[in-house]
Image 1 (tube, helix red, strand yellow):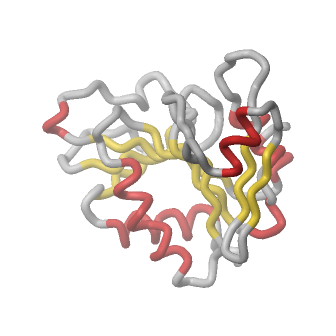
Image 2 (tube, one colour):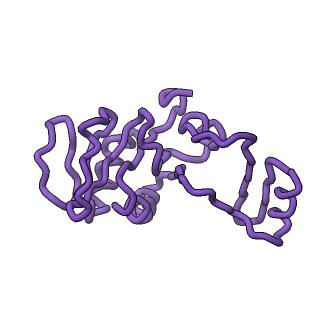
Amino acid sequence: MTMQETHLPLLGFAAASGTGKTTLLEKLIPLIKARGIRVGLIKNSHHNVQIDQPGKDSYRLREAGGSPVMLCTSQRRIMITEFSEVIEPRLFEELKFFDRSKVDLILVEGFKSECFPKIELHRATLKESLLYINDPNIIAVATDEALNLPAHLTQLDINQPQSVADFIIKKFLERL
């Protein structure tokens, strides 16, 4: 699957750990949803996350060898699939499992080495190298300092989620 095959706007957020990707996304999602846009999110984690708890039925059934295990309630559905080998997930492979019929925009946290449009987050106090220099897929930099960016990049204020949301809507969703 390629980005074109997703048939949906796909936008990533790339930054060093501790920059505030989740914090910004937490603010952006309600701002975008307030405009009637259905937002989905896919997050890549490098941790061995346990979504269910020892002693719970879903945990016990998964530990017994069930895979996938789907837990359904009146509020949500959770699907847990065990992998037979440890491999780094690929964004476009994971998107195959994402119900794209229920969203207008997919935001992505992580997968920063994959090729799709991204906003880089940068905080001066972290003294991290800028990613856009080596990533032609970065379309904007949300930062808390003035930068001398190339003309093809848009500079956004990381502390102004509304202006970041406006950029996303103008760039990806004006047709909605």
